[in-house]
Length: 257
Image (cartoon, rainbow, N blue to C red; front, side, top):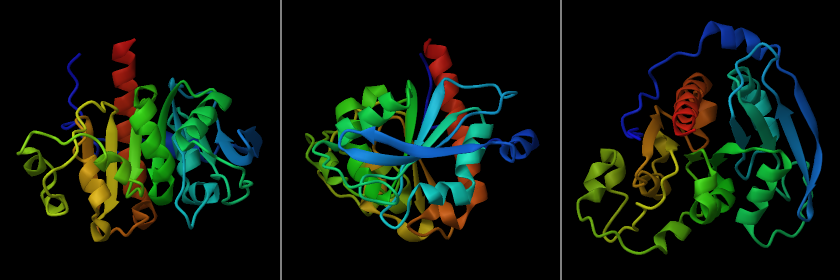
């Protein structure tokens, strides 16, 4: 199947007015689920009854200073549900309203989250600290993910433990301002085929974003004048990027089935 993630236009469409109106009708349900050893607080939003529902679902993680509340206040939970996606935002163990628990394997924890909420084709949005969970999952169970949206994640060291890439020109293939953050040798990421939208702020160009731009099915998107939590600096652009990326993921999945 021919589908080039490097050339998908992730700013090609504006969010339709219909979705903006539906957003205000979305209800967010909150509660706790026992996942492994932690009582995990969650916010869940289902697509409105009159929406075209996608088989793709979205899990929103958070950075160290944030929680699921961030996504509610930003409007992301309601926006994504109005777009037709089952949307779950959780407080990671030890953060927000969730208990600490004892999480021995972060990738298994994420897998348990997907199973608990019956997320068959999940896209995980993973800013900053939550990269410790999502990057391990990407390496070990990436084929289960329909998509991945890292936002300046930490924990990228797991990528650097992979075998060395033999393509000496690969660094020159990524977004030019990120190239100086890499140096030979870089890890060989060609076997990680998960569709990925690498998001970062113009003021927070990092090695993690540069490394993730080496993924074969990735495309990077820089938020102008954006900081570390770049989604807070331009919510309109952030939601537009998600709208286009998630629709591309849904289209890709439909062609596969």
